[in-house]
Image (tube, rainbow, N blue to C red):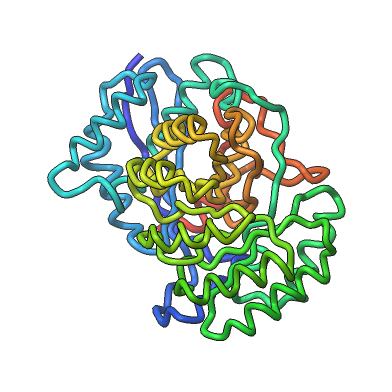
Length: 364
């Protein structure tokens, strides 16, 4: 069986519920995101679908998929996903695989894993190891910086009452008192039992991060402190880890597998946050999860619940899925929370199919 063709559609999809507003970043992003829908067809009549997204660079992503990346995989065996991933890295060695090339190849890699599941007649989570049948879930886009605490509570409380663990709260504006008041209002509204993660997106300096860490840990009672200072400040993360019981999380901006190795070897960060799309697909993600297991570290995928639910149910050291509904309109049967959990599709592969109406409506 060989790969016969690569089809790629470029969509521009309006933002729905993210409301992401960086209080420090004055860059104005468009009111839509780019979505690349990919279908890999084989000469045996089977096909697999994959996808990627980005705020900018949609035309460049489409050009990479249709051009040099298609050349990497055409006429190749779709089961050889690891060899093809390294072939794609080598193809871009001269200019660098990280960035748009990796994000573009992620769509192809996801499609290859979908194909692998269909060939084996197994859902993706079983192909990965079948560690559990359901995944715990927390909310990833209910408390972005642009949302008022009351808006967040209106979204989160009903879901937490159904069994959702809690939510990730994005902070990091110029006014740390505003951060503190907002987080405290959310904690008061949800009660002491709700799981809370604080995500500063690297916007705090070390002094602010240390001061806020004490408040978040002692006064609010949080469960995870994510990306509080720039990722390259290893000494800063050491100081934070030495003063906190709450685990530190890092990795959502990492482009290379080696960056995760360095963090694990330092011992200061106990939760890794790999981004399937940023890294280049499921293939490098699985390698990072395997490495993390050797260090007894937890892995928490960055959003993308459509794929993360399979990763969490397939791999043993992923304890929860970060839920976001941003991609929901693009799939015929989107992943949805049911009784506080996410359940992977039982169909072969990842079980997703594109919504034809969305492809027509948002196609560029």
